[in-house]
Image (tube, rainbow, N blue to C red; front, side, top):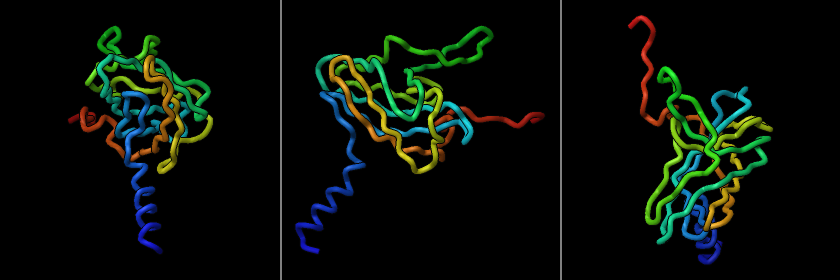
Length: 159
């Protein structure tokens, strides 16, 4: 293989490591998962980075992996029980700041999965931003991540 071919192949290998970009918005560390293999719903998580000088907002998401895709968050309901709700106004991303979409908080929700989310697969998601426009992101399915990102720990009953 020529040095030029090797350089080109090396550059192509790095592409998945680069963040997706739309305008001044970048997506970092995206991953998707379903709660179980038989789930009819799943979610995607990522960090949205706004390198611009104006606030922006994630206003919608779409994917062929689900019948419906919504922006969701968790809120405390009666009795302190957490429940998921749709965030119709979307998620603001401050100028020069970030917005984490993570388990137990804001996320992209896949309702009515059209196929299982299996380890190693990728999910194509189109994110729509108020100012930056549309961005298509290839999101890897990672079922091995800690369910709560290292946060909450479950105790056995009776201990």
